[in-house]
Image (cartoon, rainbow, N blue to C red):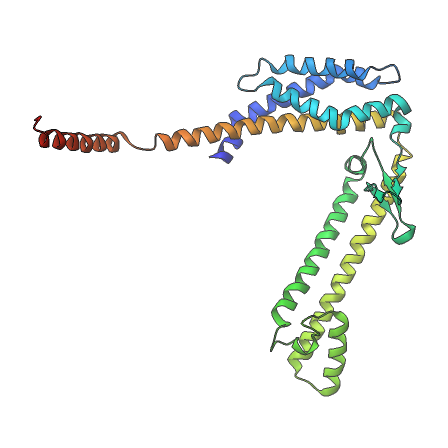
Length: 317
């Protein structure tokens, strides 16, 4: 029932109307947001945004406009407020620049990086406070991201094949049993056992199994290396892209891809949550009235008969 309601034309229309209202609301304030600078008053800004959002959603049936308003205010306090202050203090271009993560060894504090370029001790770790890397990737490097994801999928599949083959044959009495050490097996152990098995003229099935496992390990290593290199290349071009962004692009990414998209998604969640609540109520009512009239009538007749017997025993009837 739940999925049927979510897929119904009525719900789709309701959800679309909510999205359109949010889009219209944001468009009405876009100029104001584009003009954020050192003269902006954040409290006044969010007051205008919030009041207008309330007004636009007030006429919408079933939906509580304050639930929508709460989504905006939560996002404002968690993220948007800091974004606005960064732009006020540094300007759009400076606010969008990557920065090195903060590491305080004395206090044992280290920020979680948004982007890592390089490996090991030479790795450079960056925070992107205004524009997270995923926004850059989604807008400018979607094709590259898809290619990386495909390579990761291939790598995971290669690892799964290794794991399944080991689970099947690296057991007591299995073809890989002689290669195990402390109930474990890896490429080095398999290679060493294969060399010894060939020298000893061991059973051909064991040799074939060891050779197959080593091939699986090799395929896994190649797949992992390809995925890692592609991910590293994507990180590098993403970092480079930050230095190429014009102010207009930064505004587009911040206003549309970050702020508007997030608020729209949050409003959509309110709509879906409302719908799921209604589904729950419908199910409850369905259970409550699941008994048929005939079944209730039979129960009533049984009760009447019991009452009649009690009255008779009391000499009333």
